[in-house]
Length: 387
Ligand SMILES: [Zn+2]
Image (cartoon, rainbow, N blue to C red; front, side):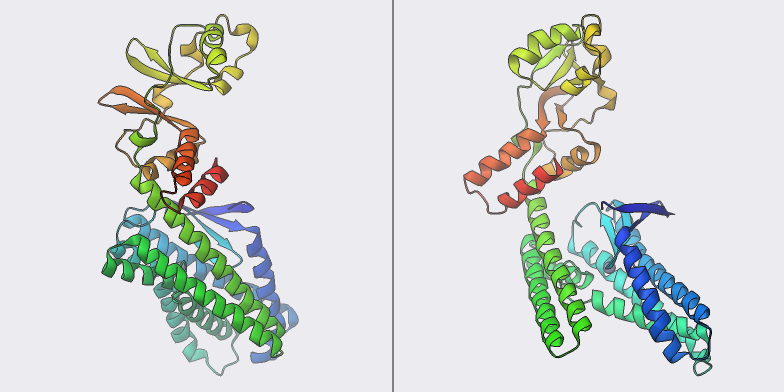
């Protein structure tokens, strides 16, 4: 997410920290240093309380990181690519780039996070047992970690999609109904109901006099609500893209240009008269590259007469090529990740078309105005945003 910076890499997965994480780290440390530790573990200097509180807060985030690593490692083992893990104000998030393909995988990836937190909580609880009643600060840190990790595990097991518990719920409905879309709809509705309950409870507690707790609960409810809504539309979008193939959306008659003409000829004969922004470059009958407006702009105008297209183009070796049978959900990551706007479509070694971002947007627009499915408005908005 924007506003994040990278702190390192574990098992090949990038670990990022969002600036909002620093806010929560400070808040946690302050509340521990002036509340929890001085009240429960008396007789220490102020400096000691601050140091111990900072250590406890940092260790809590290490626990959150373990929770996310558990999700990420299981996801990767089950064939789902993991982009990174980001720690932010509400904890952590694993950016898994694909939705799981079957309910069993979904269940495993989701449940392992809360189980990890509960396990860390149990271990910390057992470790602090011998230190009980000794006023030991180490015991205090362990007890704090035991409590927070158990809470973290239980909170994430709440069946509010996209929390882990909501994903567990979705996998179970998916398994019994056989439909991922239906399961997502039910799980995200459950998530929204629970979110509203949090908000109502927050308002109730706020007016009952516990102002901060009320605001905090309302805030969690609001966060759950917006997460449930956006997760639902993302899944609906993915299921639209799953059902559409490249062949249905591509332009089957892309403009092709010969590789040996000069840039000046290309501009005068093809780009200007046709209002083109890109063309596929051919040598005899073979695709050898792609030429776009921005590739031309990189070459000084006075050289256009001498430079051949074959020198200025993006060569085939650096292009991603797709087939007409692939689904849009398979090829969209190629476009989104690398800032690519066109993908040549090739079948049995022969060029059969080109897939462009514009064509996808146009296709969805047409489907939407024909009212084919109501998920299209989301689809269009999402695509424009990433375009
Ligand atoms: Zn989780």
